[in-house]
Image (cartoon, rainbow, N blue to C red; front, side, top):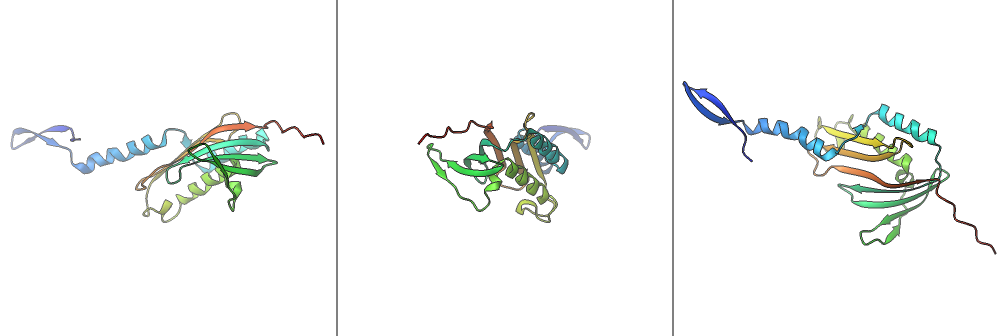
Length: 185
């Protein structure tokens, strides 16, 4: 794509010049960041605290949660939380089969873990090499809290210089799911 022509005069003659490539790139960077992030509010200590407050007020200790991640890791997770703890974690494969996972820190897969991930990634902005990029690199972190329950419905991380943006999307949230009926002996 060519830069737009800009009329100028040189030695009294009207000429057409193009903006230098570096000027065009300055406009491209924020547009790419906005395109990759898809909306939401900025991730800050305050915005995370506000969403966590709504989540705490909801008092949901039992829930089923399905969420996806894309970017450096493309996965679909089904999480069962009871009494505030991840009790079962499955990865849903592209063909629909499920594989039970046993990570070292299963707490990262429930709602509290999504908040923890956002807080840890926000803290990366204060490091010398945020997200492994050069010092001074810029990043856009956005999330959309659920208005009723406060959990992060979506989270976006777009780092200038990174190959891929990261996206987390909650695709299913069932608070206080029905308990399975006990079987009679």
